[in-house]
Image 1 (cartoon, helix red, strand yellow):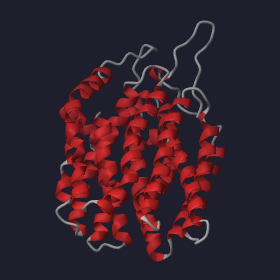
Image 2: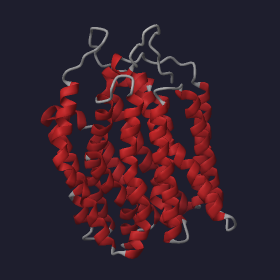
Image 3: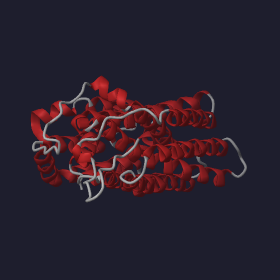
Image 4: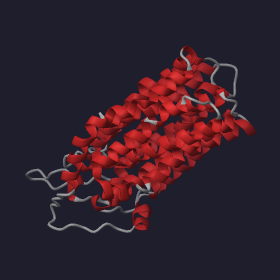
Length: 398
């Protein structure tokens, strides 16, 4: 429930806050800046989560994140000038940063042995469901109700407070009582070492979230009607939710590199179709819908796959560092994608921006295909499936 309420408040305002700034006179770059500030504040907060957990514990940290994410929303509704929107957005970003790191860390820590991928997939589904329902509805809500009333509904994360205590206690009990199967506890590696191991998954994540974040932010601007914008967002978020859940479950059973390559290629093709659609007057809806369905599947699936790959490559002793790095990659990608597409729309066109993103995903595909022989860190005991009689332990391959 903590994840559900917090991400509901986040998903609702992701496309609405930029529209609120535009209502106050901001241009496309200003609208993109709203999302960029949200993600910049998120990243800065994520870097402080470890110290916060050490100081006040899991329960209070989760509560702090929910309050920071929810309480500034009614304040944002008071003014549509760009500066107040940016300031309240920064506070919300700090809360979101806390919730994202704690959420992914908790999913990995509480996962049963051998089911890390499935647990991450379920966490991803809980994250994605609010986007499926609320993000596509945002353009319709904007056209039907007053913007300040919609923005005030971003207070939803505050409703998560009753569930922060049981979740915090459960994670603390698990993380404070490790039971490694090999009889010793490994010391965490340096941050630089961990980042080297997980560089490729983070790069793929950065690019695909930049693409998804650009669509989520600017769908109302590059479509002709609110109904079409809502349809576009529904196509993206629905396929993303299915992809994130399904690929999480598959990650426990199959090699990850081939399916990662397929999804990166899918993202590149989807972005190319979107670029074609928004730059043409004919067959726009068909090409746009197809592109968004392809991008959505890759956007969701690669989130689960890159998180599982990152945890596997880094090892359980580096779980917190991996979670912070992955979430920073996710949020930095979302912010950079929004800012870059807004700048592209101002200097050139939306079509040119999406075409550039498609080319970058194609380059990432080449990197994935060439990286197959690189060794990874052996998974720790809690990420391996239990051995069966007459067989040896299987290992998840990158």
